[in-house]
Length: 27
Image 1 (cartoon, rainbow, N blue to C red):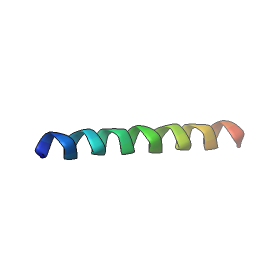
Image 2: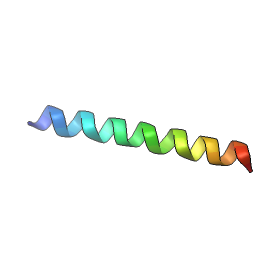
Image 3: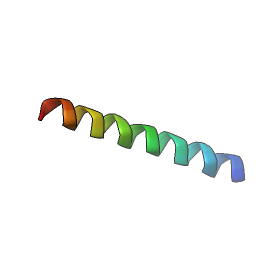
Image 4: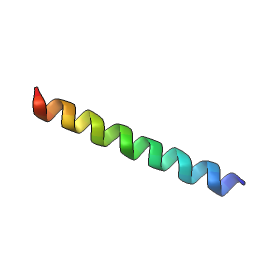
């Protein structure tokens, strides 16, 4: 259960970083 929460947090963070990076590039 703890591992699932940890993995989910990592994937959410990676998606957020990718979106943020794309936004910066388009600016």
